[in-house]
Image (tube, rainbow, N blue to C red; front, side, top):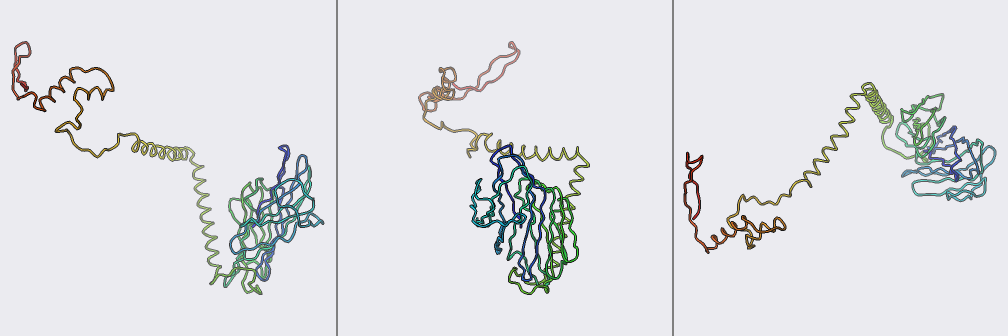
Length: 352
């Protein structure tokens, strides 16, 4: 459950590299987990760096006690400010509970040199005790780091020796081995913002008490192994899919193109469906038996055109309106007219 060390420069010309981290984890006889970390940092530029900090995540049911900060043979004294500001008395550290995180800030002065800081703390409630085993799943490197880590080593030891051990995630370059009574993890070139976990399982009968652990009913080893196997299978499947995509670049490009264009067409279709058509008024009449308003027919075309002068359409509309009102009388009639130069005649329905 290692969180990030952050070194805050105040000048853009300064920088730092995380050379290595060595994490030693000891699971105590009551299930408490004691952690000691050596973090080696190379500083470049001036003025000097004056503080470093990291924040340890604390989950529900867990408690963390910071035991101290040191460098070589020098033990830092408590009492430093926990504000992330330059300055302060060198050789001191401070701890602040942020609610879900525990911040540790230590003060020093470093420029153009390599320093190694040691941080010690103890967890209670992190180990999970089952009827058959005690599960210790510790994040030995956090994802809050903004710099890559050159080399990471972690060793977990506890009562009765390690039964099984795993490292996460599988895409980090490294390995996990069980050597004697301890589990050992090695990783190189850990990317920025990438966590690393070391999970170790110990026999439950080797613990003298359970005051430092959380308890779960029933056996746990088979469930833990199944979880790890499922994670490994998923990682293997993901790796095969990535290899398949790399082996067929043109097909992959086509899939990516389709994945990008199909949603775009769907969105465009939805936009047109909602805003690009005339709104549905719910009116299904094909024609009107009478005018919908009392507006004089001579005015309607002008209003529709938003201007202009009255013409033949307005005259015709006014005439039919007068017929409708009974001012004039009209009856249907049929007339004949010649067409094709008098060679043919046709009947035309008309009014008189």
